Image 1 (spheres, rainbow, N blue to C red):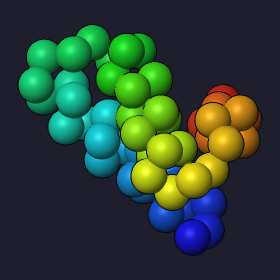
Image 2: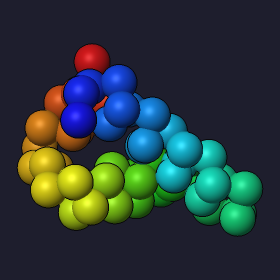
Image 3: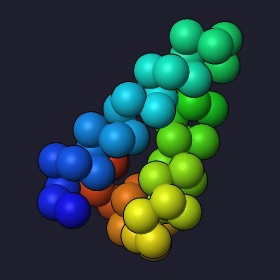
Image 4: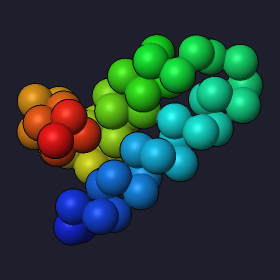
Length: 52
């Protein structure tokens, strides 16, 4: 899985959560955690990737 696939997965989950009524900041954090768990990527690495 490359960087763009990870970012795409986070974005899709974030948008889905926002449509269900969760605010943007909380949706982003939840999406990062979900992708981290599903693809076995450390949360620290995902946060570095998203914050750049």
